[in-house]
Image (cartoon, rainbow, N blue to C red; front, side):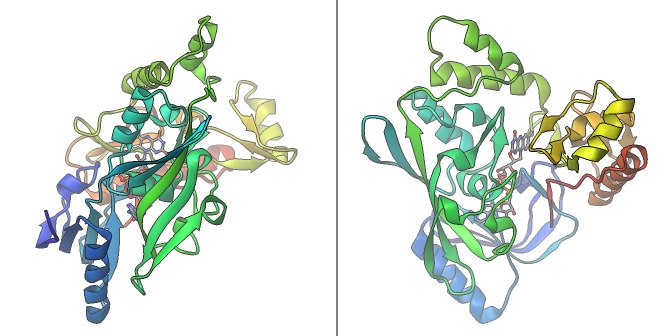
Length: 338
Ligand SMILES: Cc1cc2nc3c(=O)[nH]c(=O)nc-3n(C[C@H](O)[C@H](O)[C@H](O)COP(=O)(O)OP(=O)(O)OC[C@H]3O[C@@H](n4cnc5c(N)ncnc54)[C@H](O)[C@@H]3O)c2cc1C
C-alpha cells in the first residue's frame, strides 16, 4: 500500500490501552522515500508530528492536534555473517516479536530474552526495551533515521544513542526529532546466555546448552502467565520505571522492611522494584473509575472498564503519592503521555 492519509481518525486500534481519541491526520507509508515526501509536505504546513509504532507504551490524554505517522517499512535483511556474528538489518515497521521469532528459529542468540514484548522494531530502539536481564542496546549496532525538521537521513552508531535503562537519546535531547526507519542488529551463532532470572534458571539445569528457541519458549510461557494480553485487557505494560535510590535511603528502609527486594547498582545507588513498593501500599486489584491495578502484577495499570485517560492518570498519580508517603521514594511513569 502506498502513502495512506486519513483525517479525524480514531487511534483506538493503535494504542494498547484502547483509548478512543482522534488524530487530526493519520498517515502510513511503506518506504523511506515516501516518508521524506510526507515530511517535506508537513514542513510546509507547520503541523505537529507524532510517530507511533503499535502504541504499546503510549497514553493518549486527548485528541492529537497534528499528524500521526506510522511506518509500514517491513523487511528483514541478512547483511553479513562471520564465524560468530550475524548482522541483520530490519525495517522499523516490523513487529518486534516477528523478528525475535525468526532469530530464534535460526538459533541466533541475542533477542530471545526479549521475546513477546509488544511493539515494533523502530520503537524498540527508541525505548531500549528490556526484559529478563537483557536490554536491546546489547544487540543494536546502528539506528537509521530521518530527521523530521530537515527530512535528511542519519545513521546513529549504538554508542551515539546514549542508551540507559528504558532510555535513549531519542527520548531526551532528540525527543520527537528523528524517525527510525531501520535498525541494524548483531546476533550471535554462539550462545550468550542470560538465564539468571526466576524460572529461566531451570534451563541452566539441563545438560545441553539451551537453544535460542527453547529460551524464547520459556520467556513466552512466563510472560503469558504474568502479563495481560493487550487484545484481551488494555494496558501499556509496566506503567512505572523501577526507582534508583541512594544507598542511605535503602539502608533506612531495609532496617524496617528486611525483605525489600533490591539490586545494587554501585556503592551509592540501589534499584528497587516499583512493583514491590506499589504492592506494599495495597494497590493490587484496586480500581479508579474504569482503570485498575492489575491483580497479577501491580506495576501494570489496566483499562478494566472503558477507562478514560483521566481515570488512568489519576490512578497513576494516587499510586505515586502513596508510594512517596510510605517510602519517600518518587516513582515516574515509563509510559509516554501524549
Ligand atoms: C503487555 C505489555 C508488556 C510489555 N512488556 C515490556 C517489557 O517487558 N519490556 C519493555 O521494555 N517494554 C515492555 N512493554 C512496553 C512496550 O512494548 C515497548 O515500550 C515497545 O517498544 C513499544 O513499541 P511500540 O511500537 O508499541 O511503540 P509506541 O508505544 O507506539 O511508541 C513508543 C515511543 O516510541 C516512539 N516511536 C515509535 N516508533 C518510532 C519510530 N519509528 N521512530 C521514532 N520514534 C518512534 C513513539 O513516538 C513513542 O515515544 C510492554 C507493553 C505491554 C502492553
